[in-house]
Length: 375
Length: 79
Image (cartoon, chains in turn red, purple):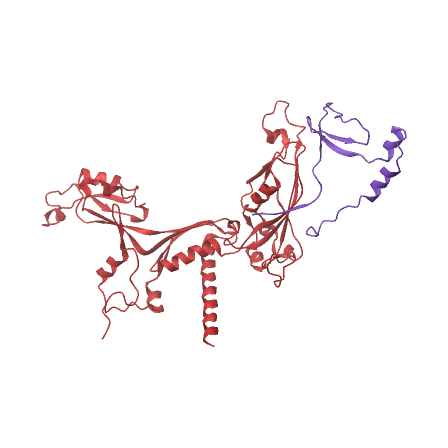
């Protein structure tokens, strides 16, 4: 028996998550075999290729917004989690303090420095290996020694002095003293070995945000330290995460079930962010049609849904008596609006492709594991 | 380079100079005693002091002096 094929309307209905005043309904996806009697819903690559869509909304260097449509939440969430926790970047890991007479304690300063986002040539980052840490509990594992391919050396050497050229009554410490503020741009990269070929000019290891304030000094105080950066992943420590934010939301869906006309329409539009609801005048055809709800309202303003993308789904419209039963709010279950903001090492659109690469790698690994299991 | 274990500097030479000293005239003693730099508690000036010197800042006359921070390298994990 051939499997039943649900109508387009029915499929559309199943895609919508209902958002009511106090409840959310129809949350889990049901497009898997065995849920709907007689229907197939088997996963097929061809069908997925046909249905899956990607739409870019904005794509700046360090912030991108795009939609993935026709995808299961599990996969979309996997991408989000991989973005945050499994794409490697460089961060300061070891801090060797030679001298620190500033008011900020060594360990606090070290922790602060670790969180400074770094950037460098992507080619160089990919060339670098992991640095395996020495561990006490695993004697068999060999610890790495710092080399050009696993450690990047940075130096921070700042001494605060009195500025002899400053006016006698100068109140601003930044003018009165030299180096009163230590910024991320004061960290200098010391290339070792092959790093000189990979991290050149613009590709040198440096802070993405040169104006991060690291410490404040007064004359006579001094910071002198060597910083060793290693490659790591966000799952180990947040400082290795290549994204500032990586989030998704579902596309909001607004259905006006019965006409909202006149003053109500204006009030209705005010329940939503600007641009979500538009006002149009009722045409004479609509007014002439019986049972449409517009009879005798020709020329009046009616509310229409213009751009549900901009909605925040605040549910404000559900609080008002006059809109009861006239509107249905929801979200589209398989339309994920991603927002990826890079910390500066990678371009934001490249980051997403990296996450796809990592997921592919994991799948290949798992497949290998399965074959080993069968053998 | 910097991840080597720290070597405690041997104090042998200095202890010898202290050991041979027989408490003669102050002037003669000051020649071979090493001077140690302290920081003034008032004006944070650097005050080099030798053995037997008066504990007093040469700039402001303050009588509280502090030791300088150790020159030893300290390792931290940035996390």
